[in-house]
Image 1 (cartoon, rainbow, N blue to C red):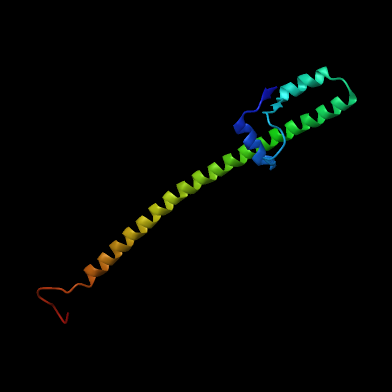
Image 2 (image 1 turned 60 degrees about the vertical axis):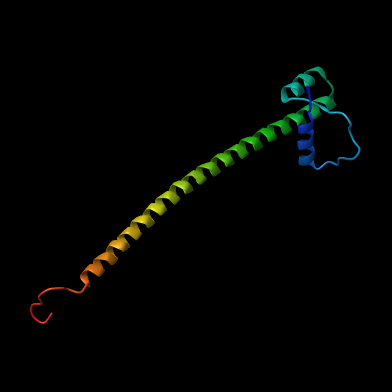
Length: 123
């Protein structure tokens, strides 16, 4: 069991949309998952057992959500990295295309230039 600090309370308040008016004036104490297990071994009533089971289900669900979120973040980072690599490859392709087009234009200019010197035949 530990006591929440002010930053944790503000974070909790914003997540569950509680009002700043009224309510608790001191920092609340909360149980860790291990603390709940220890408490349930001390309390031995039907109600305590039912509450403990529900709390443990909540902890399991929270753990699953955290794992799912970290997996999603990992996938997004991989996609972003691949897109960045593809962007660089596309830029390189466009640079080669521009270079090829410039060479083609220079070749046409060279071919169509006015010839100087002696002309043989009707040229």
